[in-house]
Image (cartoon, rainbow, N blue to C red; front, side, top):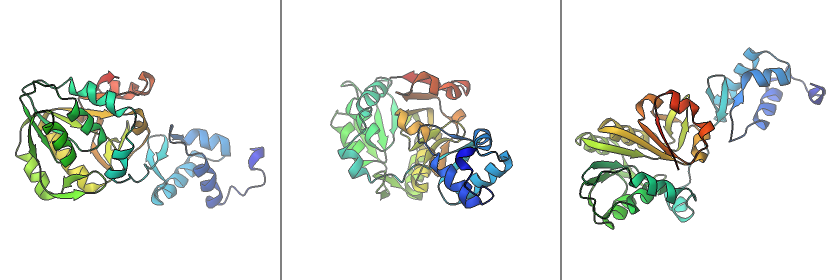
Length: 257
């Protein structure tokens, strides 16, 4: 602990500043490792993580904590600079859709890509709360039903009780969801509670749930849990296989792009 010899580690503010300096969006903080490094008890680390969680800096998970996902930029901004993985993920996911299926498509740039890659002979029904996804599916000649409600600027999707009730009236074969965050200990998450409600309603109204997400979203946790891992049937991702052990153990079918 020589590097900390001049610091007062009895001061929680000092310890918490050090812990914040250890935050890495690509991996979790491990309580036992922090305790060894700072030569303090694991219980002290846990108290510091509780304090940092209260400040909105981290979200605690079993054995430590992970950084809170940065507040999502408005959809308009994300649409202009989509993740490079969006196209391949969307193309792969679209091939999973039977030609006559009833399908929920979530909002977001990844779901736009799924809609743009619908097969030309698709004769089923696309249901979505996102106008941009509806237009993308319509451009492929698909039959589309748009769920109405107040539009959330972050996801550019309809949210609210009216949207949730509308979703509950359907019985879909498949539900494709994007991710704000996807973490083994917390599941699929969203930053906005309204988005969470509609996403969960779509999942519960479907026979199967497919989450489509890039590796970047799999080291984050949003504020609101949408689904636990055991509520997800399939994961389509470009994440390395070694990052997916917990999902496989939970019985999630893995499709690596």
